[in-house]
Length: 566
Image (cartoon, rainbow, N blue to C red; front, side, top):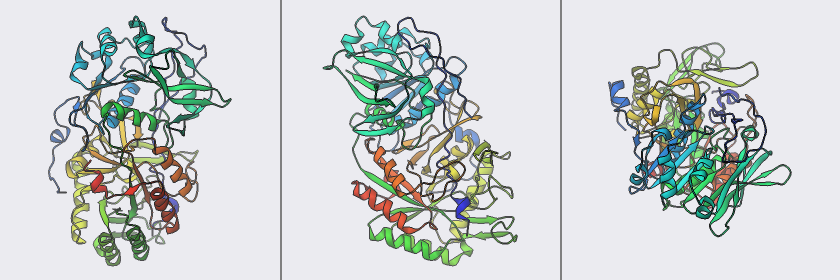
């Protein structure tokens, strides 16, 4: 059996985080600014055969469809900053915002600089991500925002330009932008829930607002610093909601990012449903697993009325005999009769099989651990740094549409040989793949079930797929609800992680109490889907604690196939 020590890689805790752009020291003439220097931060169904790359990438466009279940009458405009040395971050933040917007509506994504007069008339709402201090915003954009009654969500910089353009900003919205607050604000309270803010975000500051008319404006989220002081994190006046920072930098599972996800939903679909659904996925199942453990999990989940998914690796490889006394192993799923029987038993108890890569490892090298299935990345290269972090390097040298399609096709053949229908949902091993890989996956499956990995430079002016991915600028994103991401894929989200009984690679242990704490933070997101995964070699009592904890919070477990339909 695969070693739990290695197989518990936090594919899912080691998200590639975006930094915040350094705060400009130039003071905007229309705004008071706290005088503090800031150091620069840096970031590290059916098988379609012979799919050509040109077909996969499709025609260039920056208009995108919403996820299944999105409101067909809604259409959101997403604008972002594009000047200066940190312009790539503007694109990255906008991609993250746009992915979230897709849950509620279709959308168009492009730079603020290319906004044209009257454009907002074609949309039901606007999301603007201000990441560049004093980005030269078109006056037409400012005027249209001030004139509209449609919902507008404005993040971080350049709100002072909007205020300066208006002769009566405070009278219209009931609040005024003031100055950047650099106090050590590490907690944001929203809907009565205390939510974390990473200390790395502190140097970029929080733009403070002053509520001048409480009958028109309110602080919808308030940040608290370590001395008990408070700062308005998000302020709403009339149709304008303002967030005083970039909520996509340094995000974590209990992060203020979730507030942004909820506020974006209020713009993209004001009539958003308020369902309380949950998902559980049994992870890294392969030919070496214990059939009795698989059956016990199925029996328990069935007894609680819990449908579930099973992430299956169809071909197990241990090319150097890492776990087999130096003797290489290669086991097709069809050769593990007892495991096949257990998987069919799981299906009879409400389980849905999804495809979790082909081998969940790469070649005969450590990538980054052992070269063994379930331990390593398959569609991305990685290594462990001297200070014990898992670092993402780049896609494999042979990465291409045909290479990826070939591996997936072989895996589907293994499922067929074992007597299973082709899975319709795919989970990339360790949630990592290239842009080309994601497009292939989208062409061969009806949905992914993961957290996405994205690369800077792929969406110039919002036209995703027309640029060249820069894999030195990658970033991960988790989703608290169903989205259709910029690869065109319907993505079933997973945001709660999994049980880790020991710390590893600078990731702390994670127990059921930690997962349920994250679930509590996720309750602030309207229409959230609470989703976690569980390895079959972990003590089943941990699974019971999480399942019953989520049910106690009022969440109902549903099949992944139900979620992917909207």
